[in-house]
Length: 393
Length: 112
Image 1 (cartoon, rainbow over the protein chains, first blue to last red):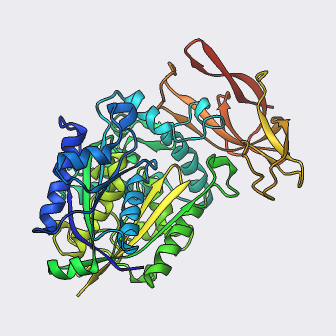
Image 2: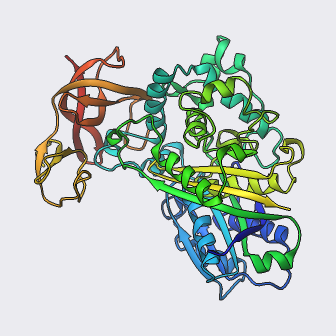
């Protein structure tokens, strides 16, 4: 496999947007292309990640549409729908194209415009990834799966609601330093948990998870420019290499897993990514996890190999995962506060990590970050993509 | 389907799976017989979910994963006012979703 570098990264502000799907995708793509500063080097291929456009925006074949927007013909074009893991899946496909020698420059853009439909429709389109006969027909939604997971996980490992609140408080604090974040507002333990008003401010969504345990519904797009070693050398500038990508699947119905609290797909994807990178979790300086629900940040921090099983909430409590801690998790604000435009998320996690590795994150910059890790969690763990990035010289 | 919920029993190794797969997850055999799923068991986990999908007019749904005494696990609707982890329940068949004119039948759990 040939080495693959990320030469540029860009995104739109996440939140509610009046822009069309293709406007969002174009703005993020142009930001990444300008960041890469390709000059007269042409883009060989475009991969677009998205989950819901066929249903909520009535648009398909997004890869071809984005080539047209950016006038990149006759570049190759693909669209990737892989649930909430669409973003990192699309990056993996772009990496494969360059690693195999079939392309030198690939633009990968994740985009979602889901606030155009009402909450029920939005929740339902994401719920359609659950098992149609064994889960969906019962009213299972992603918050429901997360609620059932949280209750079991919390009971087993002694995790309390205050730990979930600590994830939210930390990620909101980080997002307040991120101009691209959907919610740039800090929250307090009193406001979301301990004061009587908290019962009103923070209503239940899927017990034991409450509103501030769940990510917002966002529109947005994020984009990366992947290049071969030759192109990276021509461009000069900071070199961020895709050191390793791992992916793993698990049963469609969550109840079929031997231990439903064990995120086996995360464990396998992370181990594969680290093995391919020739690195270990202990080498990592900065992390982006898929905290669509606060409990997932804790569980993924363990399954990715950063903390022993059942210890993630203790590391969180000790402040180790804060921006100034030993292993900052979700400096961007995470899905929790940066937002979660589903198909864009896996790309946006890597955008943040590229910026971190290049030292371009201003107030939320993790000092001297050289190795970065992201977990893009699809389905409810039935399809996970883990990525390791490394800064070279 | 008569409203019952079916899993599959592998003709080769006898493993019962729910939901069905095209291939036995244990031995990769491709031949099965259908078996009705249900009976008594205990609540493995549950939630009250307020973030609902379309086609529900209620304020929230109480959903659970139940481990049946034969080892099979099922997801369904818990019809009990005092849910607890580990509580004993049995399955009944009821309308779990109304999709247009169609009343979809599925598993519900009541305490025993």
